[in-house]
Length: 91
Image (cartoon, rainbow, N blue to C red; front, side, top):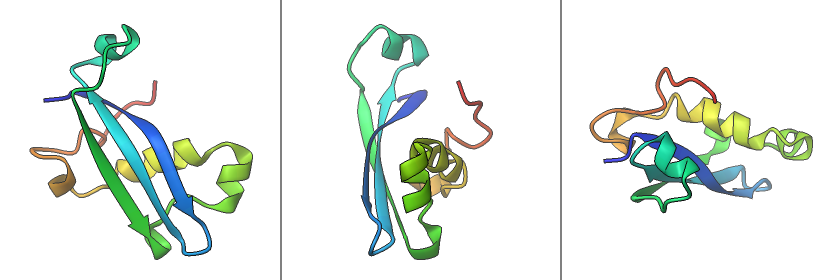
């Protein structure tokens, strides 16, 4: 099971207030730095008022940061057994 995750794609339909992120999971941070391939992936989708991606943060280049902040709130059922972003430190 992956212990280090990163966003590898963001898709946004700003007119429909709909976005999704693709998360790639690695065994650990070192495996990611070493350029090894992810061992699993997840897609998380947000719509309406839950959508953290906006025109403003896309233009400001802060969409990834907004998505990571929202990921820290994602329900545990999206990540079994627990949300790896809850309480995560930004590196």
